[in-house]
Image (cartoon, rainbow, N blue to C red; front, side, top):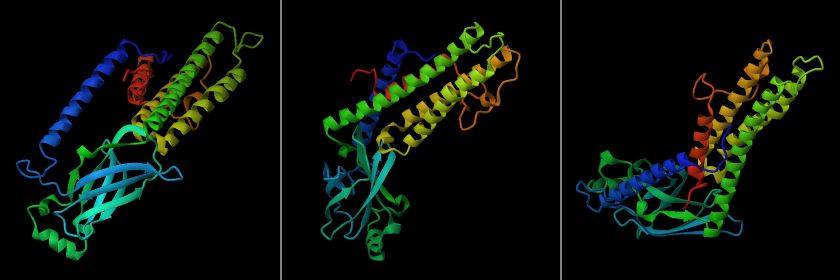
Length: 328
């Protein structure tokens, strides 16, 4: 059975590793900045586009807007620049600006549905020669120091302009909502895992799922397994899959992947234990256990039935991502 969500020594160790990883990432990012977001061969400052400010607000319908100001003095007027809004290298949305003649821009963009998140967003700017007018392309070709053909499309990472979406209150509420969902879901999966094992123990001891003759009551057992276990697990798996298209899980897709793996592991364990019960009773296992419809039981470990430790490791990974049980 999956242990309580309270983290123990193993999670503390994982937190230490996570902290070390974060420190390494922070150092790496600082080195990137120091070595030049500039693109010169010796780290010279050769930035094409500079952000002056990035402001986040909400419209009257609750949709987030970005007000962006910046300049790109080395590019010709009319250049189309793609601003790739990213979260940890994951593309969220592409915004496009066309530089005015003075090459100073201010644009307001309505973002697609996004939930508040403490995870920082940033832009990657891209100038693609294929998207330019012939006039702009000719201007770019004149300056191969700033626009070397071999480097096209010309890309810059704006690490120094990271920003969050949402107020502190909104971010805190969104984080709690996320934590509640994950903790509730994996706790319910833990209960199902435990309930099946208890049912099998009760049956073995003659306390439940027995006819008056003492024989195995397959009808009652199937009612339990099919309606109270397998159908519930199918619902959980379908809900988790839908989550990958839900804006509030944009920053937690890895946690969703772990949660889905957990649901598959519990499905494999419960149906495997049910099949074992049949064999112990001298019966052929039910097809509902061997090849359950709609229920995914294909675990990553192949034919090996997941252990308690496998389930607990997935829970710990989820907790690390959602920040549950970890002091900030």
